[in-house]
Image (cartoon, rainbow, N blue to C red; front, side, top):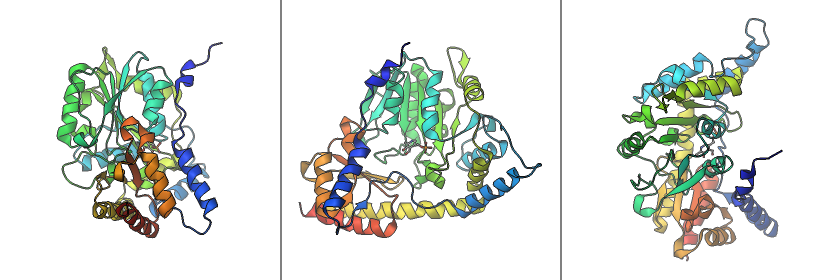
Length: 395
Ligand code: PLP
């Protein structure tokens, strides 16, 4: 038998385990000092009340003969697909319900969607980037090339006419940099993809954090995207579903390659290889889009936004370059004094007990940068921001 040899090509992922180990070692050596994690990529606020109530109600229904739900539609229940469609319409994006496929989260679909494409395709990912994109493709045997990001392009790479790629990943707002594209910038990518035949995989997991005007929440705000893009999104960050698991993928009906409809292929894939998200979870997700749900969700998002503001203000006062934090839970700062990412990690931890994530763990272009997140407790974030500012200014 032959195993998938490409697994041997995966780079070992030491980033989060090393961060956790170093933080634990520091705490053990300094039991009296407080460790504050500005490295958390998970949400910390509990599920909104309306979500919990909707799920309780769905559990009760499931215990009755009339309300029992067995296998549901693989693509998701109409009540949730319609709610997502209406959410998009609220942002000026018209989708058909049938173009929305409910999933158990963005991470699964980011990998699953690759099944629509041959392994001989070349994949373009930004550097630095959410590491999953690279691993999903390396383990399939696809060639991965990088779009370099730096301060000169505000960590938002634009198409290079000399670079040919078949699959293009765009993450906006970006993990790890927090950078967000405008619709005008996305239009350049869309025109490029339509001209070259590439397909854009647009990861919108953090769209809910976009609050300033003039920034895109969805690639489908852009004319021409329906013939070149697939959008993958999640309830994880908008509504704290990181442990509850629900997301959705939008595959427009017009999206075709080599005379085949990718929409039909995805429908075929989902109805064959997936048996749907639990009814109870979908009821909880639908509650997010009710009037009271949206109000509760905004309240939670505002909590994280305030944390981001607090960290951003500290960085401004310390005089370091950073991006993100305004329309994203992530802040991406330049390490002071020419330090490498890990040098700054060690310095900050030793001096203050504050933990962040070294940018070099997200790709070579992340070297010399550092990721901070707004998902922590507000009081602790305030303390950490002050300590961070002081530590930078004392350098
Ligand atoms: N996409 C990005 C950019 C992420 O940062 C994450 C999680 O942190 C995901 C996708 C995964 O989302 P989900 O929880 O829906 O699998």
